[in-house]
Image 1 (cartoon, rainbow, N blue to C red):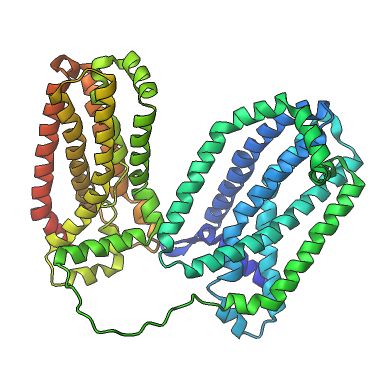
Image 2: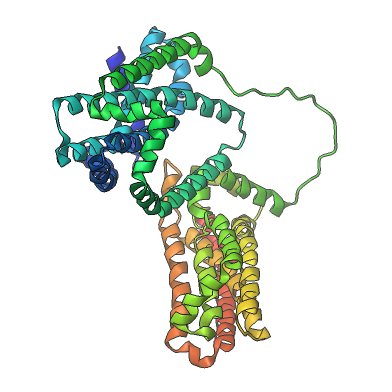
Length: 534
């Protein structure tokens, strides 16, 4: 029974490798093999290769200084962190809030069997992620000539300890995440913010990793003495890799003790945890006058609710909403450092045009209108059956992008104008077009996104990730916007500078305005007819 349940859990985790949601059918044998091969290359080749490189940089300097235990502390903590991070979200969804909890508990299956099968999958996922870090570390250690029977058993035992600690921490943190998710109404926004935070931390860590490693290697002996003197328990953690028997016995006892405690707690509370639902407050009806919304406001709120309820939609089509304000603040703080290389590379008189190009490229990443028609999917008949015109429906999709894109762009152009006033001699006409041109381009790009969305809809998807990430309308909108922005800047650097920046930007503003009017007329006439024929 446990074997069957584990196989079921495996199929759920790697469902996309066996089933093509886009075509709504199972993948071929070679297709499944190809997806698993890609996963192995990603885990072993990319992640494993990265940690092999870091291990190679750290191993010899630390081991030659008789600080091998510090080497294993660094790589062991890295393995512990990645193991927990890689499995914690799988833990909360598969162990605590799995969709088939009620079904399995209603079948004549022992609760212990369900618990064991799910804990096995949590353990395997934790082991996989932690092994990506620790296995290259111990192979590099042995490669440098430190292999022995003692270090063999020490490294393998340390990996076992790390994987068990990953399991315990994943169960604990997964429970916290599950409890929090039950209390959150709009999970999409929280998931999107969490992903943005992780991306920010990742790039901050990547930026600092070289400096941190250099500091560590230069002060390795001092760090080693400090840890060995005031954090002896942490020293024992690292000395497991060297085959320290005392450290192995202590940490194995702790790991298995925590595992037993986790099992004891889960056994007593598993049913109550897995069958719990979000607390719903009882509301008392009070008669009150409801303010009636206008048609456009109601349609716009409908689009807004769809956008904010999907983390995938927000991250892939609206990430620039956060990026543009961050760049705007950076312009104000680090303006001189930003302008100096641009002025030296392109010349002082060209900076205003380049700032406009940067703003246009960033706002091109906001393409909410491109997949909006496709996201109606098989429920398109609902919006078409409402007592509203097709243009009103399309206009609500257009306004969603315009509103979300224009607000951060206002911050950007204000920051750009302040920077240009402070650091460069610039005339009022040039400042005017630095403000107006990016805003007009924002409108043009929004119209272009809706144009592609109406012409290239995909209504037969089984997962919204396909029209959002793989839709042709999104691809053309994103890259088309970048091409327009780059072409505008490239033409200026090539020949347009002869006209002067003010005249060139005026021509660009007029051209973008004319294209916007043409697209707007097309959407109100032929675009609405195409939408009605879907």
